[in-house]
Image (cartoon, rainbow, N blue to C red; front, top):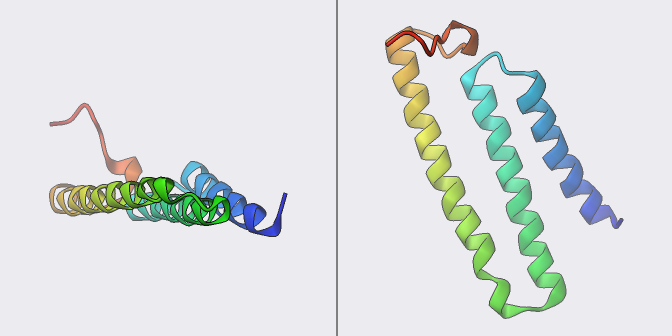
Length: 98
């Protein structure tokens, strides 16, 4: 495993561990998801540069577009949650309550 692959694998794993173990606030969960998406985008971009394939340049751009959509939806959910519940703590959210 090259140092580059190790770096992006470690970044993705750290984001996944942060999402798994530190789920107290919605904002921290969203930041962990964004870190995971950023490491995937950079890894895919470097992979297409290493194999010199110009036809594989679109998947990183599609991933980046989906990441931006995910970030905007997460921010909208964060604002809506903070307005209705007064906090972004995940323990205070109850899915059975309307």
